[in-house]
Length: 103
Image (cartoon, rainbow, N blue to C red; front, side, top):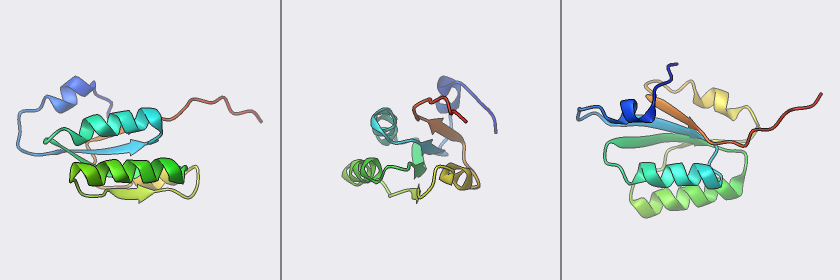
């Protein structure tokens, strides 16, 4: 997986849509999702979150935009690992809170 500045990734001069997945669709993630849904050159192919309320809100945003509902990954804190196995992803946006895990 490669890390590129958003401007470099989304500034491509091509008819192909950029295939994006989101990890975390809480308030910040929904902000990113809203911006992505406004673009015609982006396809949101997957979203992942452990909070059903945030997933529900995100699905409503997607339906309202008229775009296809992406694959949904949830159920455990490591569902994102399964999501990353999707073939052909161009970008993954991570919008999760940072927490220091204590042992």
